[in-house]
Image (cartoon, rainbow, N blue to C red; front, side, top):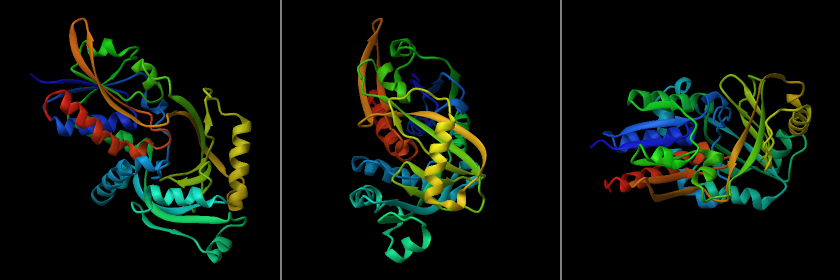
Amino acid sequence: MIPKIAVIGEGVIGCTSAFQIAKAIPNSRITVLHDKPFEKSCSAGPAGLFRIDYEENTEYGRASFAWFSHLYRTTKGAETGVKLVSGHIQSDNLESLKQQQRAYGDIVYNFRFLDDRERLDMFPEPSKYCIHYTAYASEGNKYVPYLKSLLKEQKVEFKQQEVKDLDTVGAEYDVVVNCAGLYGGKLAGDDDTCYPIRGVILEVDAPWHKHFNYRDFTTFTIPKENSVVIGSTKQDNRWDLEITDEDRNDILSRYIKLHPGMREPKILKEWSALRPGRKHVRIEAQKKTVNGKEYTVVHHYGHGSNGFTLGWGTAIEATKMVQKALGLL
């Protein structure tokens, strides 16, 4: 019998999960359920710079980095949205930068601390410390549609359908993979630890700007193919998405202080979204029963700001849980 698998969510986590499941279980029937067009999802806007917030996620990031390296070597970046980019993160907090070194310093390329001459030469008001590294960035508006195109080639079905409870889906499928992001906990029914992290970015016209440039993880630029992202806000427990003048002025004033050469930028686009905050990424399998029918739900959500960085690695673990649920491991 052909196993039927539903993946809830067509963002970066949902599409990555569906892709790995399709590769691991090629005789399965997979349907990706999503409640809104991809363009309105949290995955549509990020520049996707590789960076890990928590050391517990290092190995997930390592697996993702290897995948991005493979794509960079073998497939045109114009198709995948994956590119190699270098840059800097400044901070007056030395420990926060050492934590970054522990989290991914041996994964990325050329990780090092800048010396005083470099800091003073490059930055008008430098922080006390600064790291440099080279890594992959995966533009959400290209990378996720690229995964989606691969899935369609493998006959994975995409269906716009609001999912209000898991049992409704479980009644029709053998395995349900919960990649609902911010709403993953509510859908699970047993997890009230998810919370929104409101993010706002501005895309500006600055073709000369080729490096990412951060101060303390909330003030930054990341180059995309046809624009540069300036960010951001990271506001916990805020649900509003409207971009205000206060947002614009706050983001631009902070970044222009860091890099005066970016003053009075031409804004091409604005984007806001709610990142799926959670203390730890949830990757867990549960057996459930609906109307006498058994099914398995695999929870795979709560990546915060690191969905593109961690998603490939966490999807490996989630896929193994799907295989085990179907008796394939």
